[in-house]
Image (cartoon, rainbow over all chains, first blue to last red; front, side):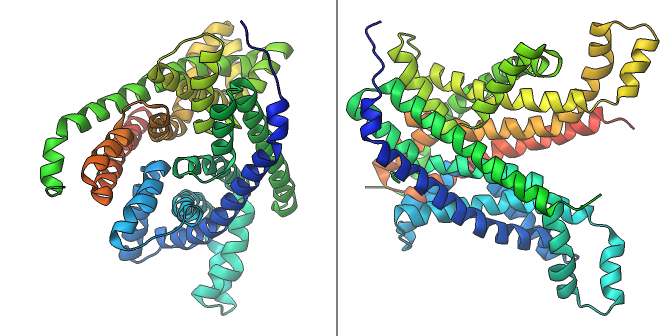
Length: 220
Length: 218
């Protein structure tokens, strides 16, 4: 077919590819950490007794979950400057992914809160803890331990979503790969390398999270 | 110079309409093909022998480890190098279908394995063969169980279809970019895109919930 595989080009740009992968991990980690905090708060609002909290958090989760990440990013990066808020590429992507992650993780946490046995909260009340103390010292630890498997699935897909940063020219792995592809026309080599790097990182993250899951799992 | 949002919207209504049509066409083709392919892969994953099970497992795990955007760009660029000439839209549908199939396969496996063993044994006891057990006992229960996850995946595919704008398919996102390129009403038209996607996703979600209620065991 007249196409000979030649990985020399990839070898030369390996540094760029790993830099891109590192940037993906960095953006994902940052957004996932902040998104988890938002998710926790929103999840408690979703099951709150006050209607206002339930409505506001419900709207946030439903709306963000149904809007593509790419639209959120384009809106924040290209749209918000019109309203006087200008961010760089990486901060705006982290901002977008955080909002996006918050909505997804809120759903996960909500499921966990509903699964907590009612008696546990009542026990907290019985020993004289305030509502806030019950949430922070009793419910959140149980919650995080019980939803860990669902949480790690979401963490992995949020890491994969970091690739969308390529649309606003953040020099992450997908962007670097496309650049190599367009500059050298080593198409198969570039995309196969990127795929291998993504799959390998997903496996590695899944492996690490499984160790965490095993550690924190509630003994039966 | 722009002449106000509503005027600009009115001028570009046909473009937006065509964008919505393309988005729906790409998404629904991908969901349909992906689901059919996913059922086949899922069957191998559940009932296959050692070799086919291994292949199906490798397929789902690898596809699920690659971001949609990378899949789309890979199919678009790599297939043309090996002389399979697909249009941008075909490449987009192919990659979204493959993404969808890996997810459907995984959820079908979960659904089939969650059917209680006693039921399979009961089916055997009343004399049903493998195929009869599958079609009359396992599959209906598995489908009922995977419906919520499947609806979520369908919404994911619609959202993923924004990324085919990167290879030049003129769907909602690219239409909005073209419109914005003309009138610079960035916020308004991206917000409009968000609204359209929200309406599509929300109606899929609601339809899914409705069907769930209809088919639930009372």
